[in-house]
Image 1 (cartoon, rainbow, N blue to C red):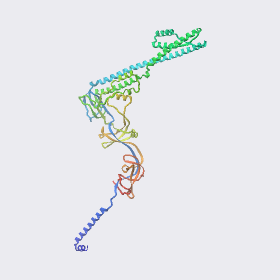
Image 2 (cartoon, helix red, strand yellow):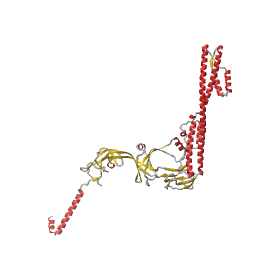
Image 3 (cartoon, rainbow, N blue to C red):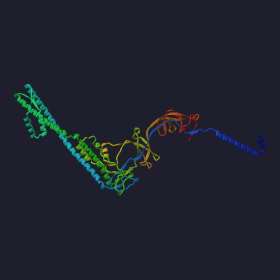
Image 4 (cartoon, rainbow, N blue to C red):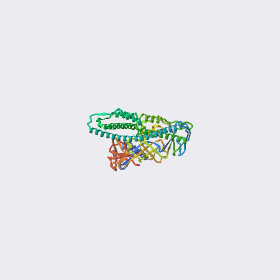
Length: 529
């Protein structure tokens, strides 16, 4: 060391200055290295959020498919000759634009057959209706006659009772006698001459043979003869009553005419079927024209070719029990109804062209039962399509019926009888001011605004940690710059916030997007924009 000092003194001033500078630089570098290796890490920076009262909006997130509010499907009957097709998929059309033309001569038989079936059903119904009205009139007449005969029988029985009382009062009655067969035969012959049926005569003969009258003395022979006459008259009245009741039993009332009810349903069914076929046929015969401004989304016809249905559904037999709706028919009436129904095979038809309107568009979504109970018509919604948001409104909440695209007699029957399967819980949201980013057939995201809650204490969603059923946040202590993990009780949630019901107070500051591994007392630094 002494040697170094002696050598240093011998150096020139310039050399001494250089040596001193070198030593200073070395010492500085050494201090920097030591500081770099042993200095404490700076606090991590985090964004902080204020815990405050505000408004929360509860939403339901769903997905759905964009559809047109107005969709016009043009149906063609299989086998029809296509003459012209003037549109392609994607073409925009205006109301009144011609879409296609046809030669319908090859399929006119479908319309004729449907009209013939309807006319036959209507004729059968009108005939049955006339018979029912005649039967009702006849029944009323028979019931009036029955009432009159019953009245006569009651009066005759009263007369006989009085005569028998007189006989018993005049002398003791110990025996009874029957009416002679000669008297019975004489009256039966008179009945035959008056036009009575053999059944009526047999009924009278059986009743008269059972008549027994008190045996009285010769002095009272006049009373005895009168009793015989009255009893024979009563037997004739009972015979007449039995005949009238038998006629009444087989006479059908117009009010309870089950066959007429069944035939009326067949007429309605055949009329609905005929109208459907005629609508399709008339449109093909006149040519197809757009009913609205829109876009062509399907073309299943080709000029110069006969139409073939793009998709055929298997035809099912007509459910006769659903048509009758509990009406019970005898074998003869059932055969009549079955004959009128004829073949229940569907008329081969399908969609030839589809035009959908772009003026009004909506999204159809399917929701489960619990979510359905939360949704009401008129609720606001946000629709996101191709990263662009649109305002929307719930316009329909309910069950969507499944409809068939073919002219299937079974489907028509189900519609007529008010039956049909359900497609689930359907909700429709109308899109306000759609543009080119809203594409028919595309899936979109929807947020339905269920409820707005005012005055709730809330924290940002990204501040909340979840672990084993527990929710927590890191609360910032502004005095020493440290954090502490705090368990909270959450309430409602929306897109951006959690409601806090316990664990925090207004004015607390919490860490956004915290490191879940942070320990209590960890120092942090607030990140500024």
